[in-house]
Amino acid sequence: MGYVTAVPHPRSQAAAPVRSGRRSLAVALPSGALGAAVALLATRQRWSQGTATVAGGDFPLTAKGSDVTGVPAALAIVGLAALVAVFAVRRTGRQLVSALLALSGAGIVAAALVGASDSSALDEKAAQASGDTSAVVAAFTHTAWPYVAAAGGVLILLAGLLALRYGPLWPVMSGRYERNGKPRTRRAAPAVDPDRPEDIWKALDRGEDPTGTDPDPA
Image 1 (tube, rainbow, N blue to C red):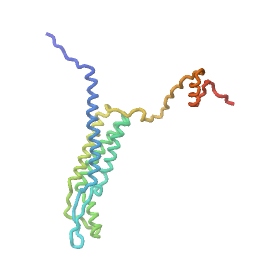
Image 2: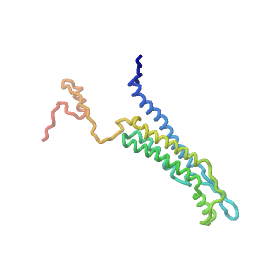
Image 3: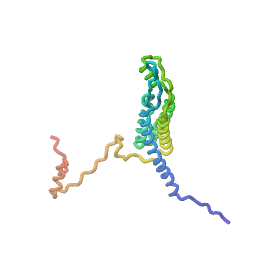
Image 4: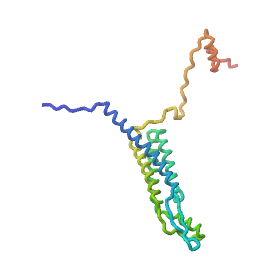
């Protein structure tokens, strides 16, 4: 008794990469855009708080994410630009931009986690408030916003990893937006019928010689 081996249909095999590209793109685009928005929003919120001793009393101090570190906001903008640039380049260029996107996300995560325990911004404010350059903040605590920024970095990192893996399957911008330095092919001018006055007038409007002869060089 013979056995029949099932052979996959060529069309289904060809459609599998297309589906993978669409699914990965559907995840990467919103992940990257949302991650950049979350990271930017988080840097504008209060990351840490503490107190400084001023005139015998405690003076409350707070620091926003942008006061602690400017790295997450800067990398969020870089990541957003890289997410858009992925669709404007091909092959090696796309891989390089995808790597930049992933590195931007990883950098945001690292900077946010380090910033959660960084009291230098509050120490500087404590020195200004007390007039003592050696003053440091007391009762230092941090909020959850540094971790929110780190979560945004994770989303950007995810988008970058998906672009590295499935980027070759993603679409590319239309050729009309590309400038590769090649001259554009000029369309052939429509034939002019000398017996039709309207054709002659149209040729003159286009700056052409309706007779088809070159002007006298003299």
